[in-house]
Length: 280
Ligand code: GLN
Image 1 (tube, helix red, strand yellow):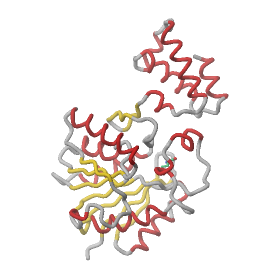
Image 2 (cartoon, protein in one colour):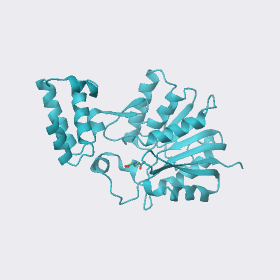
Image 3 (tube, protein in one colour):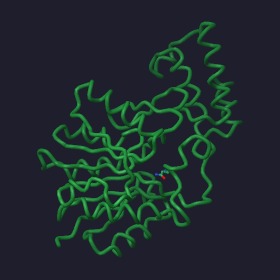
Image 4 (cartoon, helix red, strand yellow):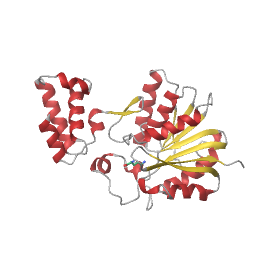
């Protein structure tokens, strides 16, 4: 295991020991903690482990190798074609759940759903919520649909998955003025920003890049959110580290929102902006 971890460290993997352990646990199909009591790895899994280590050293994301990404209480299926959900996005979901707390059947829209991490977590943790997950990418939406079907089969309230673009002025017009919460982890990385190889080579470009200042897609998203939300309805948008002032300024500048605030993640980095739809 020490050799495996060293190999990944030399390849520039950010958390080499944990990744090596998770890959071994994956091939053995045991929880990571069980590795402590493991004497020897039998031949066949050892060969699979070696193969996965090679791929991880080549900076294939850990989650593509295990096929799974943990997110809050769920485990999402992920792989080529879909953005791997990040732990920091769990905080946006926590904020959203607190906004839904006193509504029995709130109407929720997740714009740019990807794996479905946000939408499916909200449906799972607020069972009465009527959630629509919007995804524009033909490849990614296969994963949204798959994960939504898995959660429905597990007994969660079904999430509606809709193919569409969050900047489209015709998107979900039937819900205009009725939505209680719009939530999004949109593409927000400024063009040309440096991202890890796992991200650059394996997350779908459409899920990442947001134009020169990273806010191109968000500008369109604000129009959609303002149209969909009822007066007093809530908006939560994840953003990049360096957008903690720019995004709130953009939301204020739109004119249709009040109570604009920014929130930091557990590492103290500005992470998401929230607001409420102004009364007309
Ligand atoms: N947080 C992601 C990253 O670090 C970017 C996510 C996004 O653009 N929505 O790569």
